Amino acid sequence: MCGRFTMTAKQRKLFEKFLARNMPELIARYNIVPSQPVLTVREEPESKQRQAAICTWGLVPFWSKDPNISRSLNNARSESAAFKPAFKGPMRHHRCLIPANGFYEWKRTGNQKLPHYFQRPEGELFAIAGLWDHWGSPDGSEIESCTILTTTPNKEMASVHHRMPVIIEEVEFDRWLSTETQRASDVEDLLRPAPDGFFERYPVTDLVNNARNDGPELMQRADIQPEFEQGELFT
Image (cartoon, rainbow, N blue to C red; front, side, top):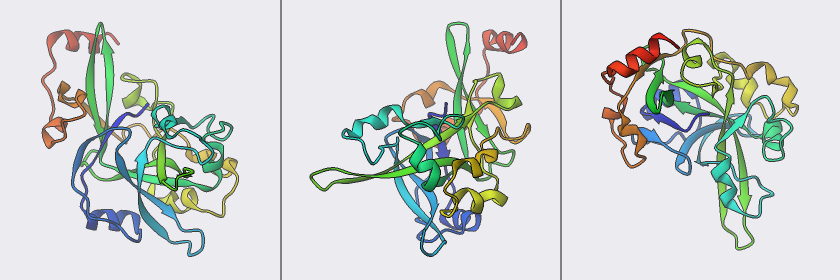
């Protein structure tokens, strides 16, 4: 799964990477959690241009009677998304990109869990595959929300967790976002693990466990205690 990520890039870097209209200037975020607003990039159906949009992390399907369904829909398994009621519509016509600079995952060692941070070798931006939807209530309130697609792990991820976010390479942005592609099967080849070596990982402190913490110190490498070092040796 993917339950925490970072997005620290400035507006200029975001525009250069995603070439999206209405790209906002955002504050750096070091501990984004479900239910919070996140930046997404999608394709406008009429103009075919990319557009930035803010969505709540945790999908609320358009047909849902209760927006609290989002609490269980912050991730979607890519292998079954095309067939699940909450995701099959967005897989056809509401695909998006979620910009990120890194993400956290927890490795269980004995009775403890140690958070690890995953990032590109130079900390550069990358794009997570997402789905979005628009929900409206009888009283007129509206929510635009999103979910992160996950897949099987690559080499760096496998020793920490059995799932990882789907990463869309820049050369595939247009194909993933295309509103002309209505069949999920046309893009299923993109729903694969990132290549081995795509990410580097290292342990961080348990400050990230508290969703109220949101500063650059969360990304700093932590000293591994002896019991964790031994656990790493024999996994």
